[in-house]
Image (cartoon, rainbow, N blue to C red; front, top):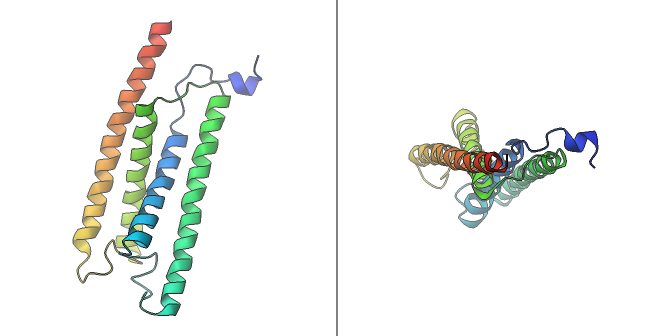
Length: 170
């Protein structure tokens, strides 16, 4: 028999917090690894500090490193939230439930990071290597919105499946 903490939510749906936090973190990793490192379209501060000098590249690489630490913290927090949910006795998420939250979190990352870093602070743009990056910045936001909508729809299919299984057991 579990402790009171472990049984406090027995049989309830999984929490959404873990999947959303992990999705935000994974979205940041995808941005940092693909756009910053592989394609090298921009770095964290590349609109403010040129990457054409060694000093500028060093500063941008340092900022990218702190950005990756932040994304890692989101993934860690999401993992801890999921473990806590299971310890409370909640149901385990099915693939649609969890993948939908990961996609939704990734989209939320794109929307917040895109609005704050690209438009408000203007510390970088999706394509700092181009003269007119606005269309890329707007495309980034549209992609984020599509991830949120598609992810949330997939998540709700997963919720329905869990509810149907739970009802069938009753």
